[in-house]
Every structure is written in structure tokens, then in C-alpha cells.
Amino acid sequence: MGVAKYMFSKVAKALSSKKIYLSKSLSYRNEPLKLNTNFDHIRMATLELCYDEIIRNNVKGNISEIGVYKGNFAKRLNSLFSDRDFYLFDTFSGFDSKDSNKEMSNGYSTADQNFSDTSVKAVLAKMPFVKKCIVKQGYFPDTTVDINDSFCFVSIDADLYNPILEGLKYFYPRLEKGGYIFIHDFNNDEYKGAKDAVLEYCVNNNIAYVPIPDSGGTVVINKPLAPKT
Image 1 (cartoon, rainbow, N blue to C red):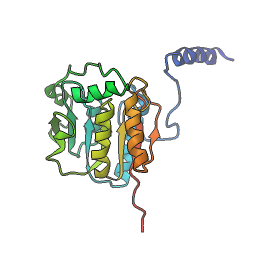
Image 2 (tube, one colour):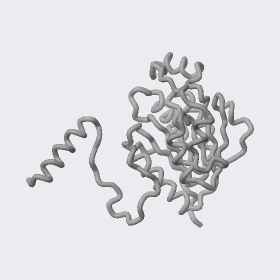
Image 3 (cartoon, rainbow, N blue to C red):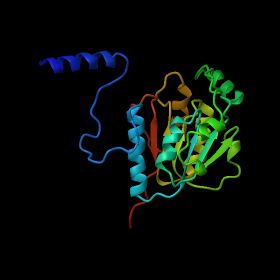
Image 4 (cartoon, one colour):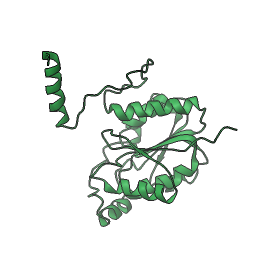
């Protein structure tokens, strides 16, 4: 083994012990990715590939995220889907006690992470196309009452069982054919309710899903396109 290969092997082994992996990605795609994917490459690259499919298939509808927190993923959604209205659902004050109490009673998680260090103003300041953003602050799904829309892409990053299940109940029927839903924390052992919520909804409604090995253990749902006649 040459010196370069030996050093690469040593670095790769050291990183893998910290669950960081060196791997080629999209080796045979000529077009560069639009997003900066240096952080959580798998999630960001998968997002962009799904966006490409939405555009290629001319999927209508707007976009949304439940669980915006500080807006880091929302910023990327707003950047990609610059011509779509973007609904941002969050309490902007952390977990609601109704959800966290149910989470703890079911033994899913401690529900004690503090997500209150954010604000609508701080999130909107990050958005490249802020005029497309529609903030829905409050308890989900109560904040959906005045919406009459369909969606091509939805991010559900609400961590807890109840808001994730409610998010799927609300958004999947309103998802356009060819659209996608990303659910964060499906393979996160600290938030076991996320997986239970996805499995409950998908099994009961005969919906297929694909887990991806990104940092947060996301699972992807795609509503199949209608057959061409």
C-alpha cells in the first residue's frame, strides 16, 4: 500500500469511529449541485435531487416545513424553491407541553431539548426570498385552519411523535403526485416517537418510504406520479 493510500485509510478509520464517513457521491453526474452540501451532505444532496425530480415532472404546489427552529434547513428550501410560497410552522418557543407530556408518558424521549432560542425575525433574516415566506406561529395543526393549498415538498422536523403524526395526516393528502416529504429523526434513538409516527401512518395508509443515512436519520416519502396514458 502506498503512503497516500495508507494515510487515507488511517484518516477514514479515525473518522468512521466518530460516524463520519469518506465516500464518493454522484461520481458520474456532470452538473454540479446548487446547494452547499459541506454540512450533512447526504440530506442536502438528496433534497436537491428530489427538487430536480419535482421540476422535471412539473409538479405543482407550494412548500412547507414543520419545525423551523433557527431556519437553517428552511434557508436552503427557500433558496431552491424560490418561486414557491413557503409555509413555516413552528411555535418559535420550543415544544408545546401537550406534545412533550405525551412523548414522555409513552417513553419515546425526555422531550427536554430547549428550542426556544429562536424568533420569527431571526429566521426571516436568513431567507433569501423572504417575500415568499408565510409564517404560521403557534400550535400545529391549529395553525392550518386558514390554508387552502397543495404542496410539492414538505419537511417535518418536529422531533416528537404527536406533531409528526399530525403533520403526515395534514400534508400527505395535500401532497401533489410526484411530491416529497422529508421526516427528520426516523432513525434517531433519542426520539423514538418519530419512527413510530411514520410507521403508524405509512402502514395504515399503505405508503412506501425510504430511510436515508444522513446525520439525523431522515426518511423520505414520495407520492407516486399518475401513470401516463
